[in-house]
Image (cartoon, rainbow, N blue to C red; front, side):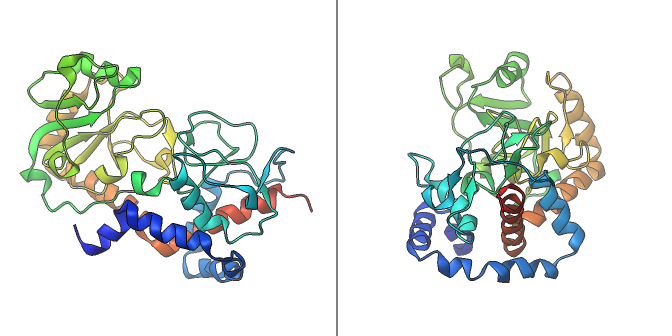
Length: 315
């Protein structure tokens, strides 16, 4: 692991940095708000507006409701401190008296009021405003030095079987020679489904990697799509800042049926069609590239929060 990646991914470094930032007077950040907003001019307007209006979909005035909380009253809660710090990286640029709604954690339902969230259903979720939250866990982009052709002609998955969609995969395919799938916990799993932990590096030795949604989005999607392996997944039902709802089947990833009945067929096809496989891998990496531009990410995040407040506050 490079030194740069260590500082980006290490949780201790993350907490030291964010505790320090959180201790600084917030007026220092508010003085820089216009500076960051003006930086949007460094990027094509279409790129900025497309992402801004995707994350925050409402364009008319909308009420935050009377029980909305002021920015200055938001505090760290239990095991959601990473959500808090990721949120405050943007929120500290705005006036502390502004009111908002927010929900930290895995959100898998539509909301009836404008609310900042990490995740939302792709369909009918206009009140859910996306921010880049739980960043270390979800936005893990890797460097894969092994070519697609040099990988094992098999498919791999590790995870917790906490939803029926994942159990269905095991009922249908567990034990097949070219399926290295395993449960990482005994809960909700048959004993024979438990398999040893596989690191990301070990999973990258496979041509095909499954990405399966859990409570909301699949955590492994981002690192798969920055690798030289093909991402196999059903059409996603949830999305985050990564805009999973904008991914194109068989262009950014290999679409499989919700019942997993066509996985072997797709593996056989893409094992032979190397050029087609590498095109999808290239498209996935190109999609991922936009989220690696830290300046762009910060500008869009600030603009999303600015739009929220412009559309929800009483004047």
